[in-house]
Image 1: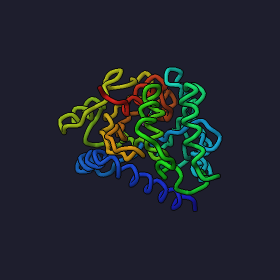
Image 2 (image 1 turned 180 degrees about the vertical axis):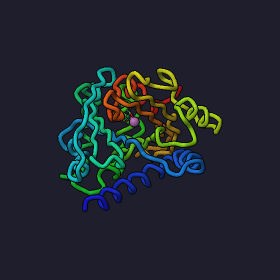
Image 3 (image 1 turned 60 degrees about the vertical axis):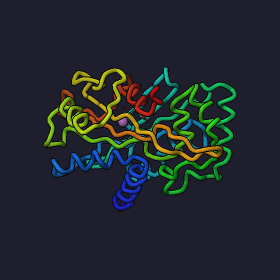
Image 4 (image 1 turned 90 degrees about the horizontal axis):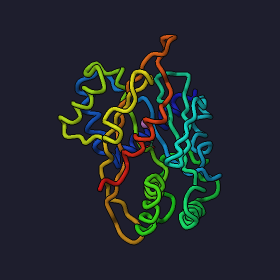
Length: 268
Ligand code: OOG
Ligand code: NI
């Protein structure tokens, strides 16, 4: 019963993501040519920890359709907290939702964020399309830069609003490439720039998860005072390893995720 609703939601999220991430479609097609099917390991969403839009609000449609909270993660250096949600149907992607600890910002930036949230219609989060509805507030480039000085995450979220930050190719299901190093080499051979923060491969078999990601390409964003090119969304690649009981590890690794977040950093 809920499956058609979820499939429609996930497809709409994919389309929204591709709209600002044409490189993801190019990469998807490169792998599609060599594989019978491409499995999406997880989708990542970002938000603020404020009452109107916190993780719980973003997770609502997923929780209502059978997803369960399945892990939590702390990122002290970036002032973020995240949870991941899983569905009993293993064919459905995990949903990874992070939130910024808004109180960690300067008073000036906290005020700015509160003013953005104040522009939302009451109960906006109840809309079926909320998690891919984009930016519901006005933002000047000046304010974007003010946030950027303190938090890349806050600036990205203020500029793009609520939309998938990335999708993730599940390497285990690829027949064309056996390991993450081969995947990365294939990407580089095809002109894709990878996020090398902490090394191109994050994690290890010992942590039951290896991940890599592209560097978000710049996209043109319309601000209230001008248009400017800023980093958009990226694509991720994940290989999972079996636990002692033989089942694949389904969680995330905070130390690796900490570096994956940097895929949307402004490159100097
Ligand atoms: C999420 C970064 C973390 C993972 O798979 O560990 C992550 C983000 O950039 O919003 O996706
Ligand atoms: Ni991810």
